[in-house]
Image (cartoon, rainbow, N blue to C red; front, side, top):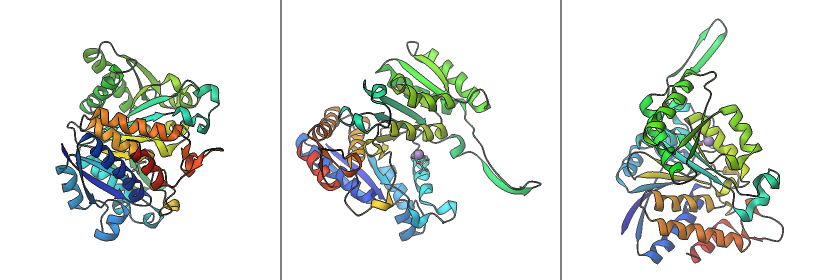
Length: 357
Ligand code: IPM
Ligand code: MN
């Protein structure tokens, strides 16, 4: 089969880590008889530099007509002082919205060979951790009405958290589907003791799950408590369903628990099979161009694309196995280096994985 993939390299380490993922995808294609065609488009800071906007029309068109999208990372110091509308982040939010990607899945998995890298005590993580955060991605405070003005207290500014039943139901379905293949439990996170939008969230999640997934148990957790449970008892969490802003915050926390943000991938999907796959980490401008960035998160994002957009489950598993085998043999990039391991560059890490497909 032939697959057309749009690659949004982005800024900082984006191009290097995408190159690593492409290497691994090509090796996978060669082994399993697929052709992956890659078309590179601009997003973020590099797009601002070349086109004056973080999300050029041409990029949107390419993303809406390909089979799936691989993204590196956007942003950097260089663009930090630009007005909000032409900041690199706006490109990312814009492409999520334009592609209708309301469902963001962020699995935070602790790799057995990297358990030492977790900042948590060994006994808390020794049985493994796999928190799968299902984050609503095109609604809530990220896209709600906002404004600013000046009043009695001086300048003021406001943002709004607003969710409709339809938006809550469609993301609940995604979480329930995932939980159906696991322990049949969804932990839904909100702030229903304070927020009206959270009360609707809670009511809707329960009603929808009870009606459509009677064998799934929904457990509610307040977001402040969730922040605590992630570091107190991470293996108790599993599939976590939450809003855009809470998911943003908790996914960084969950990622850190695994000790290696350089290893975690995420998928963003809408109603169809075309998605956007990216590492959870950012553009790390401080190490860009030095060939030290860990490409594994992007490689695993590419693997998720094969499974979740193209239904290539064996191919996805082959990439995950290759990553595991390289780690088990002691190869490490700088970010996950430990005593006695063998340090390699980012590009060499990608080659090692590609060779083992
Ligand atoms: C993320 C990032 C983005 C977000 C930023 C860059 C807009 O933090 O993907 O988690 O907040 O969604
Ligand atoms: Mn974030």
